[in-house]
Amino acid sequence: MTPAGIVAVLVVLAVVIGLASLTAIGEHRRGGRPAVVVIAGLFFPLAWIAWYAHDEQSPRRR
Image (cartoon, rainbow, N blue to C red; front, side, top):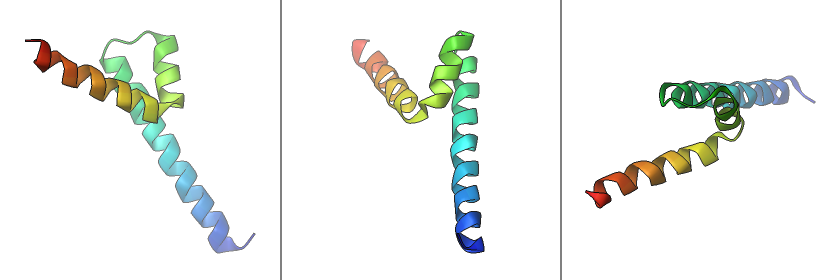
């Protein structure tokens, strides 16, 4: 692998780890249990979808 390829992989990995960490922190602030926080961090795109669906349904119920 070329040095540019290694740098690209490291940048992508850093972005993924950063997004997963921010998602875990967000779930913690939403009151999630430790196991849910870890799962949200690992599957952060799904956590975002769940948050969006939950947050969008609340105003409609009012």
